[in-house]
Image (cartoon, one colour):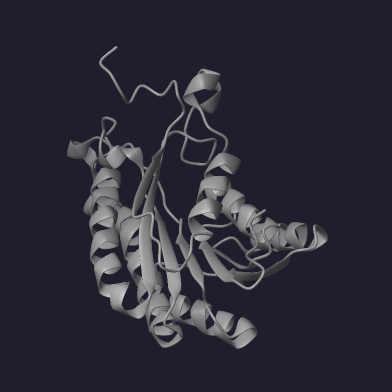
Length: 242
């Protein structure tokens, strides 16, 4: 039985999909969850669900691409709970625009949400965790950073960059007891999965399974870091040539 009752966790993109599943898993283990996303109504519903199950949750509507709002998110968390032990950078969007049709505006939008937001949240977390001399950041990547789908140039670029950012921050945080890692999920039942009903069951994971993996990573001792992990449905056409 994993016990995170002494931990405070911020989850971005918590209003749906993997973010909701991750927040539920952490709250179910006792963590005080701070829920961040742009959709306030969905966050409030999730916070109430967590509280009804006996957990602790704080809904903080936040556009994580906004530096001002990210700073406010961390200030609110500190004002409420006095510490930040875990940040899960989950907020992200997918895109399937052919490269020749990809506008600079769309490129920048994907970059801001999938990469810049993770940097902003991690930077604010570092400021707090350095003082605490402990803390953990988990970035949610994608198997696409290794094997892309067609027409996903911007999305794949951000996931490759997020992997590099993770490694750099893991080094930067080491002396201050800060662990930084990345989880690369395969296809899961989330907002990014696309045409879910057309996929065989063996090619699809449940979002709750990703929540369980994040919970396991979060429960490791402070001195241990699972730097990177990849989780796949066994039938996903990732390995082998078929």
